[in-house]
Amino acid sequence: MGGQVFSAGHSDARVVVHRAVLDASGRPCRRVEILGLEVGWAYSADDVKMIMARCEMDPADIDRPGVVEWRGDGPYLWG
Image 1 (cartoon, one colour):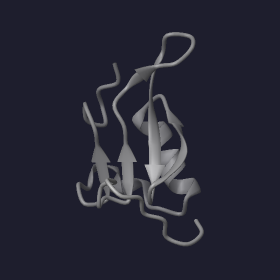
Image 2 (spheres, one colour):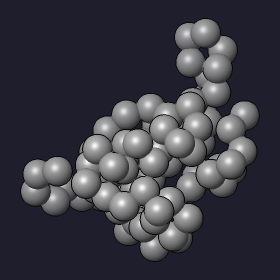
Image 3 (cartoon, one colour):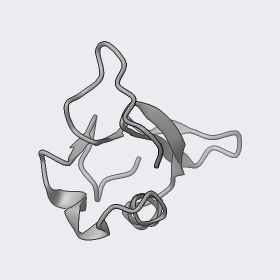
């Protein structure tokens, strides 16, 4: 990713996975931010890992609290 971007009120974690919401078809999904920028929507923990990999992050860090902040349920509960 480009330069670092932080917004007031954002977590210190590099990745923030927001609470699940329903998409237009009624499926639960979560908004994903990296360094304060929205980078995509995830329907599973595997989607979060793919987003992290695309952003040149190690997907194995998905369970590291200092790296990823899960708002609402954790990485394996989606709905």
